Amino acid sequence: MHTVAKHLYWSAKGPMQVNLDDPKQRLWWLQQVLTHGTMADVATLDLDGVRRCLPALELPDAVRTLWRDYFAQRRPQSVPPQDS
Image (cartoon, rainbow, N blue to C red):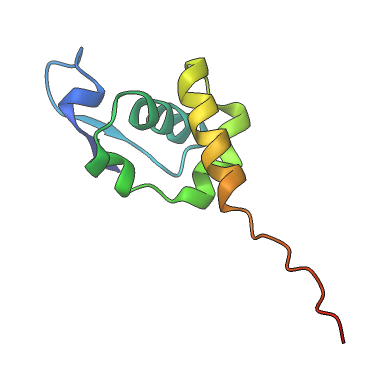
C-alpha cells in the first residue's frame, strides 16, 4: 500500500492508501501525480511504467502532450553507419 499525499487527494478527510499492484488504482495514482504532483512526486515515478500506461491515462491535453513529447525525445537516436 502507498499513502497518497494530501495535495494529490484533497477530498479525503484522512490519509488515503492505494494499492499500486492494482492496475486501476495505479492508473488513478499516476493520473494524480502527473496532473497535480510536485517535482518531488514525479521524481518517484517509474518512467518506463508511465510510458507504458500513458495511452490509458485520462490526462489534460497539455499534460499528455508534455509526456508524449518527453518520451519521444528519450528514444535512442539511431547512429548513422560510418563510411569505411
